[in-house]
Image (tube, rainbow, N blue to C red; front, side, top):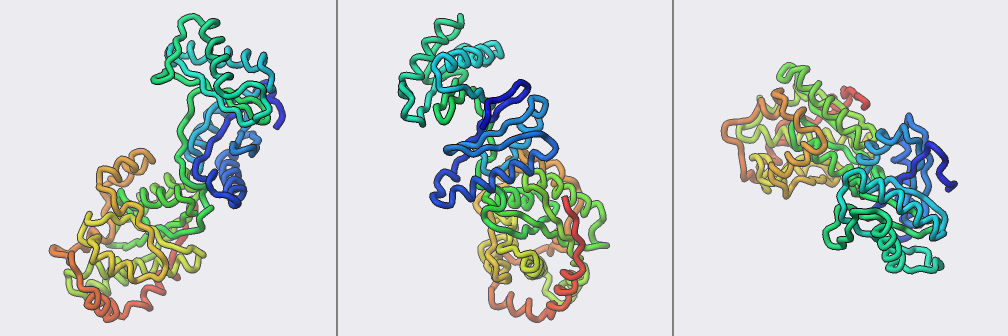
Amino acid sequence: MDEICAGEILLLIKYGELALKGKNRPAFEKRLCENIGTQLKGSEYRITRRFGRLYVETLDKYFDLVTSALKNTFGIVAFSRALKVPKEMGKIEESALILAGELFKGQRGSRFKVEARRADKSFPLNSYEIACKLGDLLLKSISGLKVDVNNPDWILNIEVRDSVYLYGPEIKGPGGLPLGSSGRSMALLSGGIDSPVAAYLMGKRGLKIEAVYFHTPPFTSEKALAKVKELAEILSRYLLGISLYTVPFSEAQVRIKERAPAAQMTLLMRAAMMKMAEKLADRRNCNSLVTGESLGQVASQTAASLRFTGNQPSLPVFRPLIGLDKEEIIKIARRINTFETSIQPFEDCCTLFTPKHPLIKPNLKRMQDSFRSLQIEELLEIAVNSADVFSF
């Protein structure tokens, strides 16, 4: 990587789990670099991989755009704006004074700490000696500074690698694994709070997410569909784009209502959705399904109910919210900006057909017999074949 030129800035990127991937680590790093590049479309940049770090060089005018993109890129634990200098103590001291002065004048506070890491063992000073030397320099050179190693207002970081990198406070990334490094998955997306959060969390675990929504006109309005599209658009910012498949479910829903006992309706509709989601997943080369189910939250999400609905597809079903309570889920929804859209008052198909007394402890064999008696397979196939797709 060349020295940073006038008008350019350098961002040092840290990742977490990728460092533990052994021989597969280069593949994960490559995927992360590709994803960062996708996020940074429309800006000028260079990405470099070196010794457990990624570096992004860009123009100062793109700083806000790049920062916003990196905050949303799975696999990034933290990143910082950095200075890069040669491995000469005079240059290091000069840059440390500049950076510390900016942090102090920027009202970061007066209590500071210097943390040094010497990855290049040929450098004459060890990590402790570097930290002590620079800390002493800052104390003597900048009036008002105080050393506080236990509770500093800010930390000046120095890493001695191929060059020396100096940086201040870190900006948090989402963590996780690079999107696409764990395969592809089909998420069942409703207009509620839970399913967008589930899709986000499994994207964070490296799954490239596609989504399916079961549309039931005239029982639900076009506004309900518009709401789901808006949720997909929000998710696309984290998921590097998303394809949303809308499957017409009205005929199958009417068949279930006509032939099923009222108490079984919700579970049978859910089973039909799982069947259709699997059909679509197979066509899209997805190797799993994602749902927003949370154990015990509603009648269709008791352990016995999940045993039945989860028994319908042969693909694995990921339920990242299974052990979270509603407040925990809402907290994530607010953070990823899906909450306000999710609470718009447009009902989904399951809400409209909810029985007064749904089963909470269904008998597996009895439910399987009921599902077979619907003779609904052809309707499900037609529905999947009639799906529309929207890209975000």
